[in-house]
Length: 302
Ligand SMILES: Cc1cc2nc3c(=O)[nH]c(=O)nc-3n(C[C@H](O)[C@H](O)[C@H](O)COP(=O)(O)OP(=O)(O)OC[C@H]3O[C@@H](n4cnc5c(N)ncnc54)[C@H](O)[C@@H]3O)c2cc1C
Image 1 (cartoon, rainbow, N blue to C red):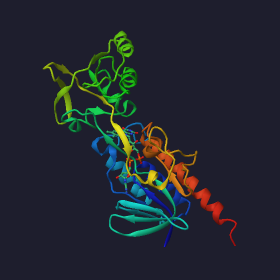
Image 2: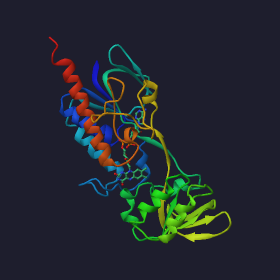
Image 3: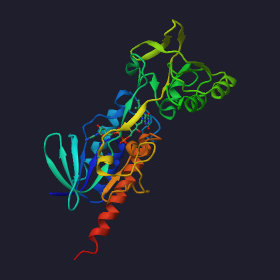
Image 4: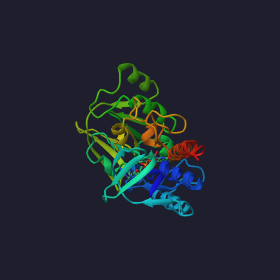
């Protein structure tokens, strides 16, 4: 059977694309191997009507919504290959099943590499986060760390100053700040510690102190880090899609990539800003792009 659309990734981008396509009576399979980046966090914020929701509950509600649309199937399977066909695309999954689809929406999210700090993953999503719009409110007015080995350090500190005035920037041995930037931060009372971090100290993921390589320890109750991001699945480049300098997809307003029939949505398309509501909106736009293009292909046929 031919699918109208195969959606790769069951985060908010893919889920919302499936909802809009299901409501458009399109035959769709949403493939998801359920490894979302935000699985480490307990609560998601900033999505109106869903502020504070657990990521798992968000997905459960989304699947409940999709169950109302009989032309949508959710497959808990990983797509391992997408090959252009004549016409459409052939997809192979980890279970060895082959599917054929007229279009594909790539919504596989991002993979991230955390700063090189021992034990950091135990704190990520609990008291250390990557996005102040998602978790800044909960950390407001606390003594915070900005742990960033990248050129992002200055921007992060500047933005996070809106939530707390007690900020220590930790560059973990990297030269990620210029002398002028350090001066600008100091003017606002933001300190910089360039030394390597030896250990993060705390319980159950809740940070209480940062121990530096020279033995100094500083009390911190949480903070923000700058991870490095890469595509959650490498299909875009393999298919020849044009990519942006930030590592996302070049698309038009309806998620169309530079390759006919391939659409992109969510974090993997935009890279930033990275938010559930934005990813969901992107999924909706890509679905409208797919439905418009399929309609234009079919409408004039006999
Ligand atoms: C710690 C943390 C906290 C966050 N907190 C918030 C918050 O409070 N509020 C907010 O708005 N945003 C928050 N975010 C950001 C938010 O999680 C992302 O912006 C959003 O999940 C992006 O949605 P997406 O659909 O693009 O990708 P994702 O949600 O990452 O979903 C991608 C899906 O694709 C699947 N996948 C990947 N490759 C394949 C494949 N080959 N085959 C099948 N499936 C595949 C993955 O398993 C995953 O389920 C947070 C992120 C992190 C890391």
